[in-house]
Image (cartoon, rainbow, N blue to C red; front, side):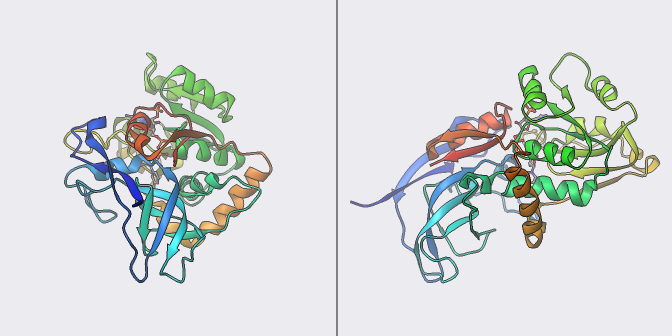
Length: 338
Ligand SMILES: NC(=O)c1ccc[n+]([C@@H]2O[C@H](COP(=O)([O-])OP(=O)(O)OC[C@H]3O[C@@H](n4cnc5c(N)ncnc54)[C@H](OP(=O)(O)O)[C@@H]3O)[C@@H](O)[C@H]2O)c1
């Protein structure tokens, strides 16, 4: 019987908010590999909010091309090589890289592909979470741009998500006083009770955001880890401490905004506060991943890092799970188990 490969395609350009009909589940016979390629049976798919940006028409930029219609949605995956015509990726190896929402992927070693040598004391999926792109993004954003010092006030938005969970705990381990921003009372209580944030801000509550921020950081913020962009970032820039560092990691509030990204205000504050704002992509740090892996592994093994996963099952679930993630219905890193 012909082996089939079920994939989730980007069926049309989303109009503002993603809906289920923007995706289409499609099965096709498994292809064959050419010289230099290998076949991966995917084990986990990682859902990363940033990919929403490249679903938009004309969103191609220096980092990624706009996702083509009728093709499977791009994704970071982890899987096992089941057939290989590439000596660097022998059959049986566990690999991670950027392919797509599909049961099987054909790869050639490009696109962030690497072999994982899992530590048997850790769960395999951890290599897509705290030891994968989310953990690398959290670690290098904080260490290189945030440059934390003991006693710094560290404030992060999307604090309960894939990046946020790990970043908040690293900042705390570095001696910062941590403030997590998320939507809803239940989520904010979870930030305090499960992730150990010192304070929380519920940006969906009726109390104005600026007021809550001033209460949490009356002397201003030393480090801002921004995953949200837009109006929330503008507000945050008005409450900086002197010599603060702003880690520009993502702009999730903007990916679904009609007309593209809105301008960010209060830039003058960067001058008078002698602040430094810097953007980065996790993939800039590939050569230094071992440093982050060593640091985060030590936290995991000493039980000083909680690494929560928001699980969904089956490739068919990826579209709805991604929609739910953008709506904030996740606690922790969103993964699909195949
Ligand atoms: N620079 C890099 O290399 C890099 C790498 C990976 C990810 N990123 C960025 O990191 C950010 C987080 O990504 P992730 O994959 O870990 O996703 P995530 O945080 O697990 O999920 C996205 C979260 O964003 C929050 N959110 C959505 N719309 C919002 C809005 N309008 N205002 C405020 N919060 C909103 C939601 O939580 P609430 O309930 O709190 O609203 C939601 O749970 C994204 O901006 C992504 O682009 C950057």
